Structure formats: structure tokens, C-alpha cells
Length: 89
Image (cartoon, rainbow, N blue to C red; front, side, top):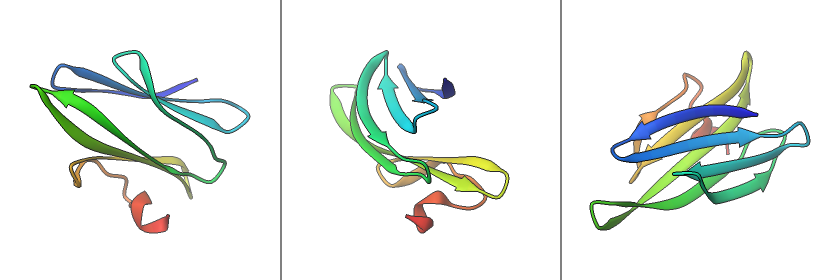
């Protein structure tokens, strides 16, 4: 099941999960990270932007109201949940 799609420049970043707890991150339809987790995890991956590799971190968690998702580019927040997943992992 797709949880999120974000367009960052010319790139499409997607997060999918399964009922068995497998989280998969895709960039431009190519798998860049996959982990099993029920409580949340961190996915670190590199994306080619304008001939330079840029590091992203996608952090998932489980908050009071459901799944939380944070996305960081080179350490700066692009999407940040109110609970701040990164601090909980």
C-alpha cells in the first residue's frame, strides 16, 4: 500500500508498506531502501540531483494518531511530523 508520494525537483519519492510490516522506499520507481518494522525505522538513501548525489533520510514512526513520516534532505526537514519521528529512534 502506498503511504506517501512527494516530488522533490525532478525526482519522485514514494513510501510503501505491507500488512507484514515491510516498508519500501522508491525513487523514480526504483527501490532504494527496504526494511521490516512495526514501530518505525529510518531509511537513508542517496538521490542524484543535477549531477550531484544528495543524502535523504525518511523516518517512519507510530504516533498517537497513526503513522508519522519525516523526510530530511541533507539533514534539513522537508516533511516533519508534529511528533518528530527522528527523536524517537
